[in-house]
Image (cartoon, rainbow, N blue to C red; front, side, top):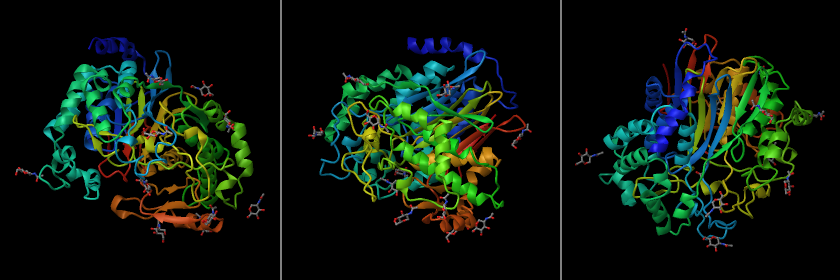
Length: 568
Ligand SMILES: *[C@@H]1O[C@H](CO)[C@@H](O)[C@H](O)[C@H]1NC(C)=O
Ligand SMILES: *[C@@H]1O[C@H](CO)[C@@H](O)[C@H](O)[C@H]1NC(C)=O
Ligand SMILES: *[C@@H]1O[C@H](CO)[C@@H](O)[C@H](O)[C@H]1NC(C)=O
Ligand SMILES: *[C@@H]1O[C@H](CO)[C@@H](O)[C@H](O)[C@H]1NC(C)=O
Ligand SMILES: *[C@@H]1O[C@H](CO)[C@@H](O)[C@H](O)[C@H]1NC(C)=O
Ligand SMILES: *[C@@H]1O[C@H](CO)[C@@H](O)[C@H](O)[C@H]1NC(C)=O
Ligand SMILES: *[C@@H]1O[C@H](CO)[C@@H](O)[C@H](O)[C@H]1NC(C)=O
Ligand SMILES: *[C@@H]1O[C@H](CO)[C@@H](O)[C@H](O)[C@H]1NC(C)=O
Ligand SMILES: *[C@@H]1O[C@H](CO)[C@@H](O)[C@H](O)[C@H]1NC(C)=O
Ligand SMILES: *[C@@H]1O[C@H](CO)[C@@H](O)[C@H](O)[C@H]1NC(C)=O
Ligand SMILES: *[C@@H]1O[C@H](CO)[C@@H](O)[C@H](O)[C@H]1NC(C)=O
């Protein structure tokens, strides 16, 4: 408790820092659940910082959208904060780690093909609570306990199944009815809850209450930790109380590039923010402002796709920098103008090449899933862009007696012997080692004006390996094409992660996404792209932007069925 009080006083100078932004409103929050964005704005209204708002909103999202986030998971966040005279950025890495007993062949030697996705062997040491603790300690203003109250109330007094949750409450997830801990929440009368029903997470409410009173330590040591390790042990897992007690969140320096008249900051390895930056650095060498009706849109789209294919090739070298010495060096090299120039020299404006042209090491491109993105900005220009996840839907499908849904993040590691259809092998940088963090596609990004340094945009996305392409298209459509934040998110997307096929979104009137323009798809098909269509790319991003009249605008992705932004 005493530590919590220290946080508050230590951070008072932040609130006194002069604002460099002439904004006409006071803050904004956007998440994939509209009522969770409202909760964040309430926190801002109470005098909370962007950090406070995002913590309260994230507890809410973790309560309602428990199928992909919550305190049993982890992620990455990028924080912009005032330092008095100026401002700075830092990244908080609260990614899960492999337990001490993990080994390289943990999954490939296991006869169970779902060992890395379902059940206890899939569980990484959760990072979420240490992440919030660091964020609050460094950038919070309101008491820690205050930030839990809205989520405790929702979990205890119930919330309504929204359309996004309803989509994940299906009988194909047998554990929802078969496992008593899950059934207590999601099938209290024997049948799975549906749209509009009330959900109660009483155990989770009590757990949040304990953590609000005792701090994050109560998650990593003591009864909650014992129960977490017991849930893992009961089903043959390797996660122990020692692993939990030893977990730390890591503060890292984010990557940045200049991009036209902006500076872009994003999260570094083991996340993939620098992949987005590397692609945009290549693309910066071309004009970007062509509108969808301009003839130049065809070659512009091709060049952005080519830049992205080089970016995914870079990514095959990445893993936890604590375990692969040259990851951070390579990451910095990939962002250099000289690297971008060399890539542009290889791009042919009338030809798309096979994947091996870009991927010189011929490493397997990792494919991951899941996640939830959110962002908050306050009146002083402090901002947080973060992405958190329990990985695949419903994580490891293990719930503890404290109502915590445990992640299956360890599936994001590579294993020896894995090959894709081209015979590319797994990159050594992402093989399993004890205490290591698996590679992630998360790319939480904040953008400032190059000249004034003022906050301009916070963005990111959910959607596994589609995060990278969604984030860079959000940036392209808003900054280069000049679309409003909402129009940028409604624009049809493509997805290309350096496989043999490039995906394009179809016209999906039900969510107001018109699909990617087919005249450009026809152009691409003519220059050697293997084209295929999907209803939506499954990525869901958000944008908070400071627009020309000085206001913050918060836009949520129409692909996220319950999402919403809030400003005040
Ligand atoms: C890896 O860990 C698993 C799970 O504890 C164990 O069964 C297996 O024998 C270990 N493999 C090696 C090579 O140590
Ligand atoms: C479950 O049963 C109880 C008691 O019969 C009833 O009050 C409640 O409305 C039911 N809930 C659902 C979601 O059907
Ligand atoms: C704690 O974690 C660090 C890596 O973060 C590792 O080097 C160390 O051996 C771990 N200690 C124990 C007791 O597991
Ligand atoms: C941007 O990145 C460069 C190169 O890595 C670094 O030297 C510089 O300090 C970074 N700028 C900021 C504002 O963080
Ligand atoms: C893009 O190329 C296609 C196929 O060559 C062409 O039909 C279309 O008009 C072009 N788009 C624009 C906006 O000019
Ligand atoms: C990174 O370093 C390792 C170990 O020194 C080396 O085997 C590997 O080739 C290096 N990777 C690159 C891309 O330079
Ligand atoms: C670009 O690709 C086209 C079509 O394959 C080819 O004819 C042309 O020679 C290539 N240009 C260069 C500079 O390689
Ligand atoms: C991950 O998402 C992709 C694309 O939506 C899907 O094809 C794949 O089956 C998913 N993988 C898992 C393990 O859920
Ligand atoms: C298109 O698909 C074929 C068949 O899978 C593959 O051989 C080829 O490399 C693909 N082309 C590109 C540009 O990826
Ligand atoms: C483009 O064509 C595909 C395949 O015919 C179709 O599914 C999609 O809806 C079209 N997109 C648009 C924007 O009309
Ligand atoms: C500023 O512009 C935004 C977006 O166009 C609009 O929603 C907002 O109402 C405007 N604010 C003022 C004070 O004019």
